[in-house]
Amino acid sequence: MNLMKRILFLAVFAIFNYCAFTQDQPVLIDDSTSIKAEENAELFQEVSNLNPQRAALLSAVLPGLGQIYNKQYWKVPLVISGLLVFAHYINYNNKVYHAFRNAALIENAGGDNPYAELVSTSDGLVRNRDTFRQNRDFLIVLGSAFYLLQIVDAHVSAHLNEFIVNKDLTFSIEPSIESTPLFSQVVGVSFALRF
Image 1 (cartoon, rainbow, N blue to C red):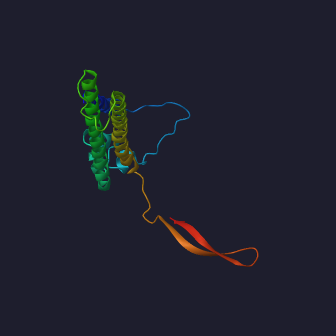
Image 2: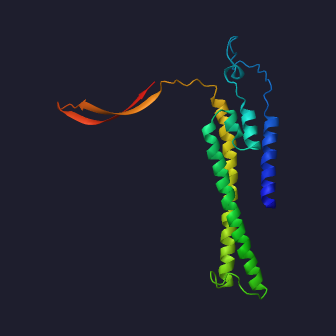
Image 3: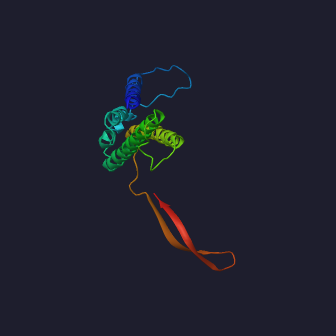
């Protein structure tokens, strides 16, 4: 459990440092290859009302909050349920790991194996202990990656909000009849993209 607290502390510390050091500061480039913006050009702050850094920070503090900030409410149950599934299986593997570890210690000390009906040898206890510890550690890595992925998702979604998407964009599958060079017709399926 102490390892989980350290990983969580390091993740939150890294996110706060990233947000503190990546604030936009004006950089003046006096170079012949630089392009000057027009006077009436719209900046990102004028096009989008979402702040990507705020979305990432909200999502880091409370998973799913960045998605709510981006008004992507359908993602919140996916984020919460994903994190709950990882937490459940990490907890399960940790409990079983500790049970087999304690059973191996008891047997090495000369006591009776409490799991004799499941595992009859001390070598089997050690193998089960190691397997459940590896599963727990692997799930911690995957759960951390999922946590970071939902932060990145909130950040990118806030950035993508500035783009204007055509509402008439459609993709359809339709039957088609095509003529061939041999003056016959072929029936098939066509994929149509309209925008």
